[in-house]
Image (cartoon, rainbow, N blue to C red; front, side, top):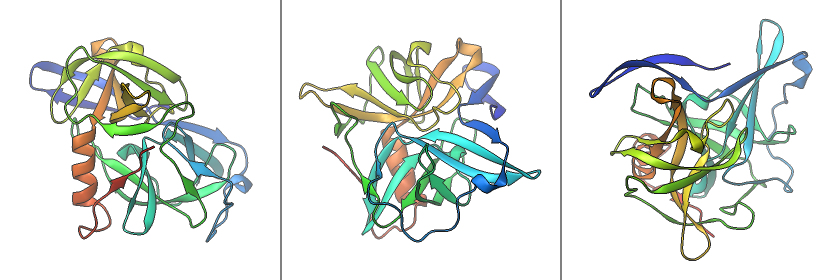
Length: 242
C-alpha cells in the first residue's frame, strides 16, 4: 500500500506522487514485539538495511517496511536515519523481528519539503557505514545534473540511475534508480575513486507524472533538518563512515 498525496511544483502541474513505504498486514497481534531495554548485540544496523514497525489495526498486526539510509550518533546515542513518512511511535525491528531501537524524533514530509525519521538504537546494537564490499566514506553536498547515482533499498535492492533535476530541496533521478514500496529511506550514493561511496541522500518518493522518476532528499538538507529538529542542538549529528 502506498501513502498517496498531491503536491504542486512551480514549473509543472500538480501531480499524483506516491511515497515508497510498504505496509504489510499479518494475521496475529502476537507478532508485535514486547517492550525491551536492550537487544541482542549480534545485530548491526547499516545503510540499505530493511527495518520494520508493527502495530495493531482493527485487531490485526500491520507491519510497515522501510530502509535505513544512514547511521550515526548524537552525543553518546547511536541512531539510524530513514524517511520522515516512515515514522511510527514504538519499537523498530530488523526484517526477522529482532528489536533494534525506537523512533525518537521525526520531521514529517510536507509536499516537496522532506523530513526524516530518527531511530534511536538500543544499547548493544551495532551501527556501521559498510554496505558489504564498500561503505560510505564521504558526503556529496553538491550533486550535479547527469551524475550517476545508486541506491540500496529493502525491496528493489541495488539499482542505479542518473540525476535529472537538482536543487537544495530535492533531486529527481531516472526511474532506473528504482522506487517501490519498502524502499523509503534507502541510502543513495555515488561511487568514489577510493572504491567506496559518497552519501548523496535518501530515497523518499517517486513521481508518477514524471515516468516514475525517483525523488531523493539531498544530504545537505537532511543534515540541516536533523540538527534543527532532532533531539538536541547542543550536539550535531555525526554520520558514520568507513
